Image (cartoon, one colour):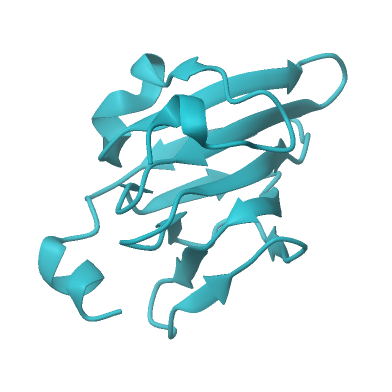
Length: 133
């Protein structure tokens, strides 16, 4: 399925070039708001996922809207994600998220505001790790 055939609840946006170095595969980003609260609509092509990362101070909330995906915290089993799922990621938790190998996946990424909040990008999710899902 091509991007123009995939219908997301919110606008898909353009290629996520600003963060491409932290993703395996192609993702798309449409910022829905940056006023008071940062909410981005992130779309992953099949097999696309972001690197392991940590949100310092504020954490993140994922609101799954389309397709099928995965979420995993370091040292824990992977969670399958579907539309309507909500993932509340506490600060300081190493994790990754992305699409299933055979499905597009979209979530709203809500950055929880906090003084001094930052994001630390880490190593990619290896092909071996991902293939075991």
